[in-house]
Image 1 (cartoon, rainbow, N blue to C red):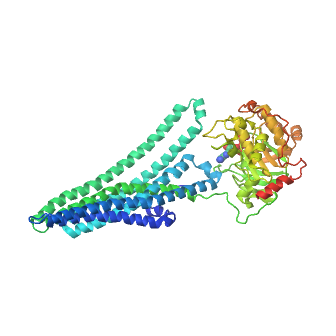
Image 2 (cartoon, protein in one colour):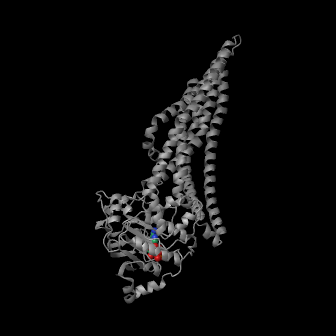
Length: 631
Ligand SMILES: Nc1ncnc2c1ncn2[C@@H]1O[C@H](COP(=O)(O)OP(=O)(O)OP(=O)(O)O)[C@@H](O)[C@H]1O
């Protein structure tokens, strides 16, 4: 996944296309910083004239005042040019950062579940936030100052040579070890920088996971162990940071000390040259004033180089993600379904996870299953048999490694992804709610429905999922829920997630044990309403409880990667030993008892104006029309 062997220039060059729109402002920023340096270098030349002429005995004070005024004006110009650099680059640099962050986020959305299974969330978080922050600071300051510093040093050294080649040589001699040391510093600091950014990403993952799982950690009293493990990782990061700081300190020592030594040696040689009459005092003063101006940029070489190496690492890390290609892509020659009937066929479907060891049979090893339009099919199998995985294939969260899934006879890989996902709606057992209102969570996947307002769709979905409790929340359906909002019980969360799947009014509904956290009474009511709504919607539902199985028209038995039996509950119960065995092992109690007393809604609400057809096995014209419109 990670390519750590990129060169500094090849890595930094990758930001080129992002910079193109703001290139002119960056160039002007660079020119103003350069002009500030040139102005700073011009000031010593005024000293030279002052010392050689104005300060000579017998000369008037007029030249002294003029010289002082010129130095003052130059000083003000230098300060103004530095402010101008900031103003020129700050907006474009933050614009590039924002653009890159947004496209990073868009790319994350497009990457397959398989990618997200492999990457820690903290690694992605740190790449989206701190790495792009490093990159922006380098772009707005580091890159410009590195060029300006190099040019200032070059111009300053040329000026110093023009004043005295002997003294110039002394300073050049000091530069050689700095350059050699700079190369070794670059390599070792670059590696440490990479290590530290990766470790920071891992640490962010640990924080994210433990905040997410705080209840489990507390309940099992594992807070101490989690803290110890975190502290261990934090110390590793600290060690890397200390290593970085030490290495930067050594480099800074060299780049500060050598010019200082050169300055001392230059002072001795300079005075000897003045004594020998080969150098005038004004030039000697100007030489050392120039050396003082050049010393600043030379000393800033260390921090600037380290900033550049950190930016290189940040860009490498950014592009590692941006270069990852989604394995689940839109078809090159898409087929648009139009009105969807909702037949779903698994044809010799195979699936294995990429990390499955060689020689192991496929998890799904030749699934053949056909769901008729409008049919409710329960999927039953022992735990770990691959039921959830099979469900994930329907909205193409994973693609089969062999065989095909067909919706209305069309391979789903030939249907544009966005279109497929308007036809297929999902509710997972592990419910994810976003930090939004109930309304936004439920209407997340709901498209426009002819003749129905968003509020009506919301009400119907909440009603079917028996999620009327939402109206009793402090701000009703506008109450903020999810991670940063009100905490809901497991059963309440499940019902909101179920309402979300229903509100999308899909042709195919995929439900992964959606009622597992409900108490028996609520489950019974939800099941009854679901049965009414699901008429006309092809539904594949993983069942862990006999009551869920009872909702289905037919049951499919998943065994050893294959569908070994399909039939009604009664027929399978009478004639299939494995089915009886699986059923006997299914839960009869909810995993997270949710009393359901919070929403004692009348049971006889009727089906309301939901566009459902009477169950005939035939397609539901109303539902089909709305889906056709979405397509
Ligand atoms: N992302 C993944 N990478 C690798 N293996 C996985 C991944 N997700 C699931 N598995 C493995 O695939 C197998 C089937 O998992 P799956 O969740 O589909 O089973 P299931 O029948 O739904 O189980 P349950 O009834 O317990 O929910 C398990 O052995 C699981 O460890």
